[in-house]
Each structure stands twice: as structure tokens, then as C-alpha cells.
Image 1 (tube, one colour):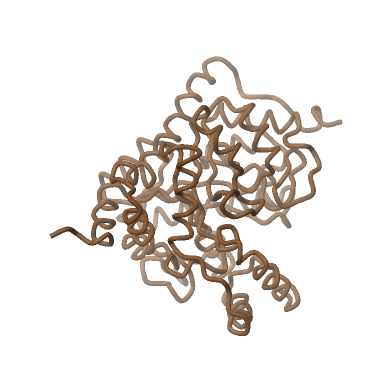
Image 2 (cartoon, rainbow, N blue to C red):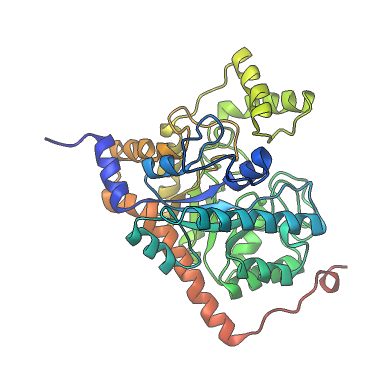
Length: 396
């Protein structure tokens, strides 16, 4: 008897688990319990509070997670650096508290070792270049603490790079921004181009000597949102070697959800909340708005539409997934939390994706891109020392 797509999906994920590019659980822990892991124990089912816990990571076939050590753009300078360090600290404490389930991973070999041990590889990505306070020394410190990608911007421009969701100020990367990319290459830290403007993408791809990452972005051709990747940028990935990890955020993947989300955001602000607030109080406001005005529903099929198109443009060797769980108020109907990845894999199976293609999507591409970045770093470190470039020296 032929197995159902759902059964085949679970079998495939047992052999080739998901490497998820972006999860904001560390920020949820900060906002909800002040990093007190006794008060929100992710060894237990926390579905009433978060999208993520260990039982659901296991159920979803997640084998490696890039935890976002995000801090909001409202934090600047030393305050942003301090908050980023606190985010890093909680990821380390999670790995220490749950050693049977989580293993801190710094390299591609660590990822493979975690999988062999039956543990979930825990990696870190800094979401927003404001986290380094215009300092390459801070960038190197973040790498030393385990951060393996940095998103060049979040929702606002940095002093050296343009964001997708801000008014352009630099035309892409400044001279210092190019130095940031080069130093990330020398370290072996992946350059993450989610959240950045198309000009910043273009500049980073021109400057980078290593493969780049889009940790949680989908296709702009399928859903015309500035947070998504234009086809001309996707087409550059084969030459660069990078990976684009499709996200599940409804307002980025479903055109009908864009206008609804703008109205929901305005409602949040009118009620005294940041539009990105996902605390229980903030979610109560969101759910009340949704009850009064039902939102357009994205599904696993919506995400699969993006992946189908991205595969046509970039090729199967350059795709992954980055759900953005615990960083979004709303999720697709059948991708509600980290236990839901089998639903996406089952949908792709029904569309004719092969086991080999799905193994690349879930595991192999992400491991390969980190390994390749490490190899480039080994070569670059032998050729050049740490950069002494300073923001003030390169900014007129």
C-alpha cells in the first residue's frame, strides 16, 4: 500500500529534518517572562503562549533551529548591544538547561553531530545590524559568542545599510556597510539579506565573497511585498551559492493579507501596543480585531506556491525554510506552529517534489551554505587580518 503524503512527510523528516532559518522564541521569553525559564518551561507544551516548545519541535521534525537574537530598532547604541547579549545568553542557557534535546551548534559539523545524537542543533542569528552599534569589534564579539548570521537591517535603515521598509538613505550599502560584509565573510558569519532593500541585496551580493542567506523571505513575484525577494536577486543565488529560506508570515505571502494587516497594525497602535507585540495582552487585541473582521487565510499551499516559483528561478540547491514563528502574530491555517512542518512537506509531495529535492530544502542546503561560508572564512583569514575600519572614518 502506498503511504499517504502525511506519512511520507514524517518519514522524510525523520531522515532529513528541517533546518529552520528564523525563530523569535528568545524575544518571546524576554517579553513574557524576563528570561525566567522556570516560568516558561519549553520542555512542556506551551501552545497557549508560544509557537515553540521542545515537544512541538520534535513533532515537526525540526533538526536545527536558527534562534533569532533579535532586538527592536527602538533600541540603539549600547542599549542594542546589551539586549543582543542578553538574547545570546538565553540561547546558551536553553542549551544548558535541555542538553538531551538541544545542542549549541557553531559549525556545519556541529549540526551533523547534533542530528546523529538525536538532538536539535541550536544556532543563532542576529536580526538587524543595529545590534553591532557600527562596530566591527562588536561584530567579532558576536561571532565569538556563537552568532552565525546577521541580518544587515531590520525594519529601519542602519547608518550603513538601507532596509526594505524604510525610506532609502544610502542607495544600498555605504562604504562601511561593505566593510561589514567583508568582515562577516572573513569570520564565517552568513550575510542575511532578509529585511534589506533590493539595492542593499544587490550591493551585498556584489561585495560578498561567500554565499549569502535570506533567513525568512519569500518570492516578490508571487506576493508583491517589499520584504520578499525579487526574481533578479533569486537568479543571482546559483552563482553566489546562497540559500533563500521561504517564510510563513501571511502578510508576506498572501496578497489579500497585506491590506488587512495594515488595518490590524493601526488597531494595535490605537490600543497602545507596538504592531509587532505578541505578548498575551497584545494578542488579545489582535484576536478581538480578527473576530470582528476575519482575516484572509494563508495555508501550506500558499507557501508551496512561493517555493515552486523560487525553485524555478533559483534552483533546488538554493532553497530552505524560515518560518518566523514567535515573531509573527498570525500564521497560515495549517502552519500554526513548529509542529506543522510535515503539512508543508506533504503539500510539496503532492506537487511532485522528489525526496531528494525535499532533503535539500529541509536539511542539506542550509548545512552546505554554512559549511561553504566557513571554507571561505578559512581562506580569507589566511590572507587578511581583522579589519580595523571604523564607521567614523568611512562616513562623510
